[in-house]
Image (tube, rainbow, N blue to C red; front, side, top):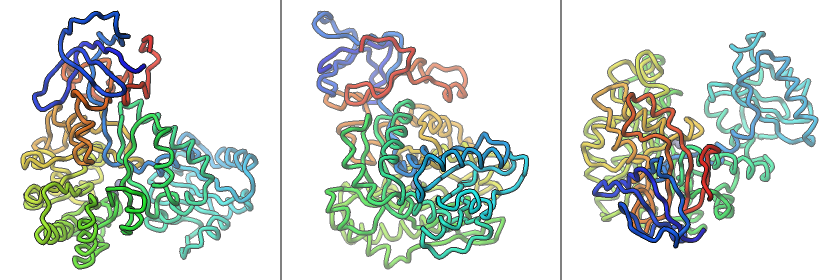
Length: 505
Ligand SMILES: [Zn+2]
Ligand SMILES: [Zn+2]
């Protein structure tokens, strides 16, 4: 439908005046008119009648590992199994449907759920699957069990104990296994993943691709498929090769390019030690090489994004950004820091002074924040309180986008929004409006997309999410977790429609 009219109960535009309207005219995928009580001859245009419902700007997830999420989507889910016997039976059936040499990848393996209460062994995997490489990813997502053939095919220097590999070896194994998978399977996984995103109201994804955890050439693959996707995907290429990025005509480099590691694996670089192992984490760069790389990318006019989690990692990255921006100031660079989980107070000020932007994942707080949870266990109460200090960040007028780091946490903006307004440290909570803005306008801005996306305004893409309930009128915050997305419109077309949404469209 080229041109049509949408009536709604309330349209929260998230424009700079915070206007609320009740109609939109969509023309060729763009918003051509909007306002209140337009008097038109309604017969002249088809009408999408949403007068019982609420409309928000389509959500933007600013940190997604799209192809690895897709791979995850197509691997066998073992979470509901209760015995090793059952697991082997299921994987045998899969084995018999696959040609020899094809990978069998399973996830969510949890021995505590099983009668046998133990890991499957390499010997067992070798016995049942001598001609198929097998990788069983454990529930903690930081370790896996691999058979001998799998290990041989990966051609990497690891010596697992009884097939068990951990942390970085595990990451490398997953990345390598993904690289050997049939691309048509990957495409299926991508479509499934993007459909799931649309069901959660997402109309745009910042896809962080490339590097050892993605299938080979995933940026090229996504660029080729983009036009067939139901929602928009923009690509951050996780490489240090500027040539690779330029060759594809991309404008963004980085993503989870690691300055340091992560808190859960005790590798985020921090100034005071972890409580559990007394370590200080790891830095993957020194100041010279980091500044040199940033300088080269900055000179080439690329937007840069780096993963920095601990205060020592953040400090190093800020020093490098500072050095380059002092030497070569640029008005509107919008260079990014991903995660920014444990900054010091002065780091927040420097981000603001340097006009850097942030890409944050509030749902980390939902899973690992709060009393007795992971952050407290590893860092103690005091530091855990300072994780992702949203209020302090917004108080410095920093533009912070919202994301999921999928598949680390699910692509679910309402989960992120809920987590942001319920920070375990109440002083760092933000308002509902601010939280929605993180997942709409701010995520558009930190991807240089705010002229087309992020708010409902004349001339912008008709990217809309249709909600059953008004999030601003719910009685308790928990309801946010169950707000029903009835439909998602991307560039004027339904990317998702709930079966209960009856329309003539
Ligand atoms: Zn990261
Ligand atoms: Zn990431």
